[in-house]
Amino acid sequence: MTELASGLAQPVFTRSYGQGSRCVLGVHCSLAHSGAWRGLASVLDPQVTLSSFDMLSHGRSPDWDGDGLLQLRNAEAGLALIEAENLAKDGPIDLIGHSFGATVAFAMAQMQPELVRSLVMVEPVFFSLATADGNADPQALEQLRREHKIVRETYLAGDVEQATRLFNRAWGAGHPKWHDLPESARDAMVRSFPAVMACDTQVYEDMLGVLTPEGLARVTMPCLLIDGGKSQPIMHEVIRALAARLPDVTCRRIDSAGHMLPITHPAETAALLQGFWPEVVPAPAEV
Image (cartoon, rainbow, N blue to C red; front, side, top):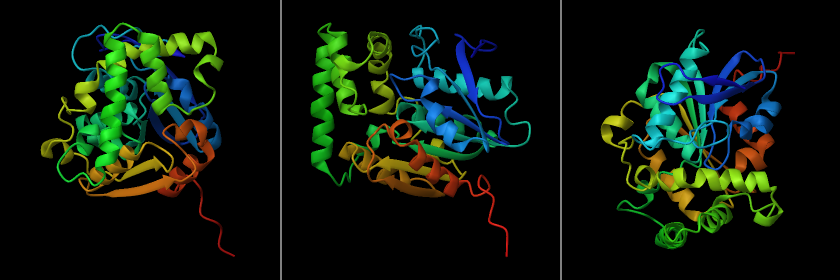
């Protein structure tokens, strides 16, 4: 793990897995860190080199200083990593993001589309799409609003640990349970949670503007959208709405998985990526 500071308002810590010829950059979900890609990278090894960074307020990166929009600050960090490590020296790279990290990857693809060969978004939390006119599942939207209201009210009341626990219950893997997690893991999530709450305007209102017609027009590379069959119903609405707005998109679902599918189902996720990236797995030799 190394520190990346050049050109950034705040440094971030980075790491990479594998030494394969296909260059991939991953952006992890909220309450996690770049190590979340370890399982997926091990399945894809040795075809892929997967680079990642700890988002601000996560992992070994410093707490976000509160300036600007966190979505943008993390996108700038990801682009700085591509430049610092010369990841695109042989051509555009593949981006993959999970949850809030998928919204960051989406912003990166818009900011410098010439660097991106393909974009994979795993359960991107663009809730502003699900609240737009034409939502096909009002019950899913009501569940999202109800659960988020409880989390936010608990957080604003000053019980950050309980708010983090409720959030993790709604979006985490479900196991191990909160009290069965190591104290260090619980502390790390509680530390990250204020930054998560600060991102409401980016996921519920699209404050950064990545879903505007102008932003969407810059995303012309092939996109893969993945969701879990056991995830919150609102995610299926988000995937449907986002797919309708992209020109070159493939949608896939892992029926047995929930929101944390890159971590809980690395083999199944890798199989979807290998199908999307046909050159990762060489074609069988002709007989």
